[in-house]
Length: 237
Image (cartoon, rainbow, N blue to C red; front, top):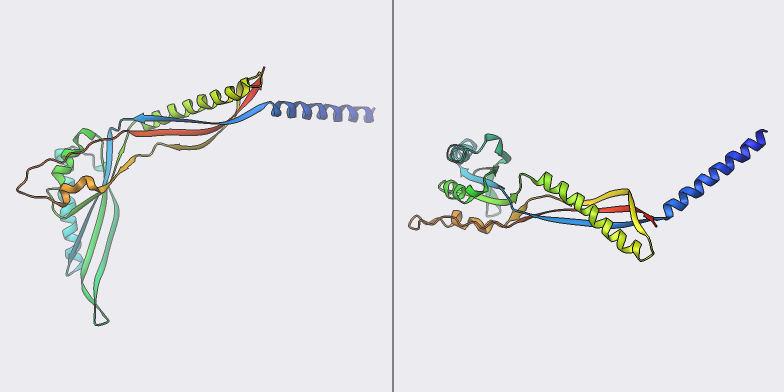
């Protein structure tokens, strides 16, 4: 009796294994991709100040004064939240020169960078005009983004799955089949990062001419949110 039960168990496992194999063979894996073009509604940029002086304290105080002036303009004129102004880098170091093969201390250098987020992109050009009234600052790493990027990314993911299903059906119909349920989805990549703009935008900040009263012109480009997946679909008749 025990041997008979053992034979039934082996046959049962063998049947289950074959059924699983048959089902796994009736699948197809394809890639799917979707890309959504979005109009940006916010911007982020870096502002840096570098000062040199005889002492470390003097150099750092000069940096602090300029950074404070910029922050005051941003918060008072454009109501930018203090949480949207973040220190990203700070460095204090001595400066040397070489003369006749000798290293000579010539002063102290202080550098500080802050990252600024402007959530009303329509004011960006005006923001640049205002803060460039503070001389000796550098602006770089200007990037555009959307406050709704999470929602757009969710939409792109759904569209990527549908794109994969369309591809699966293209292959399946050639064999008299069609794509059924999704068996597995693997996210290969997604991109909801901002678009980085070159530093040339800030030409006015570097070539400020008091005799010319010109406003900064800034032309916004769209950004793209994308998703790419691998999808495994069941093939059915």
